[in-house]
Image 1 (cartoon, rainbow, N blue to C red):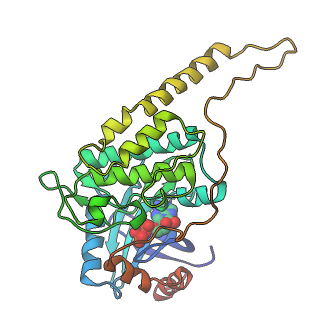
Image 2 (cartoon, rainbow, N blue to C red; image 1 turned 180 degrees about the horizontal axis):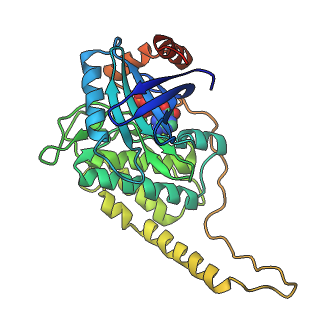
Image 3 (tube, rainbow, N blue to C red; image 1 turned 90 degrees about the vertical axis):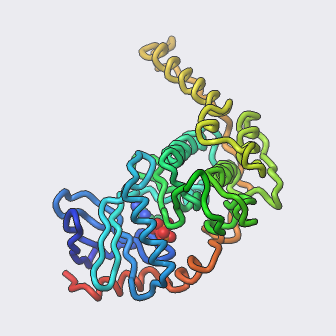
Length: 333
Ligand code: ADP
């Protein structure tokens, strides 16, 4: 971390380093540090020059919504402010990358590992829905992982508030994760996030998307899991479960029972040794690791759709260059 500069926010002063954490649709995300507390943060920095009116609306929306969210599985927005050239969002830092990269590197997840992540994702979305907020772009690359291997839902660019139980139809999000009612620009409510959650669960287990609308589920996946995925990928939004229904599904209950069993077994066997004096092995529950069905998918982050996002993405070329540009406009220290 050779270059850095300081910015004064509304709550503290921050050091911004030239270490690029990622590139977004609007700008670059750099490593930062709170000067008072010393903790590491992620700074999403957006050049105001390149923003259209619709971009500004999206960003204001993101800041308004995200700065009022406090949940263990949602990235906390620590501060948001601007100077003449840039808009800054200081975010809780997640140093474990995103679920997309994890699955690209390790292949499909075992069902028990997928459960562990999925339950956290659904709890985050349940919290949003209880606050009448829809995320509208739930996908593996927006699911970050922190040091404790905990999921943090990120990127509230497309999030919106429900008005009288529904939102004005808008084609937004990422094509592969979009439910039919969004693609058809029809009636939209919180069930649109449930469809995306169904795709996320499918993708975690297959490292692939359902092809041509066919939900082909690989061998070794439990019948409870298959049934839940099919319910979440139900075209009829009335039949699609709510987050509470997902959390009380047979699949979730089965894992809760099994986890209870592991905890109880651990307790009852702790301290026991076999005849040779070595500790007894506790059998692991869960399905064996599935073989990767594919290595690469068409577009690494899915294909974002609609013009606002696409135009902004075109503007944000070369995150290293953007980082350099940001650093050069500040007096480097
Ligand atoms: P945009 O909304 O502009 O698309 P994102 O919020 O998706 O931007 O961030 C782009 C990338 O930056 C992410 O894919 C991730 O790699 C990285 N990133 C974003 N937020 C954080 C964070 N809080 N901690 C670590 N990396 C992050």
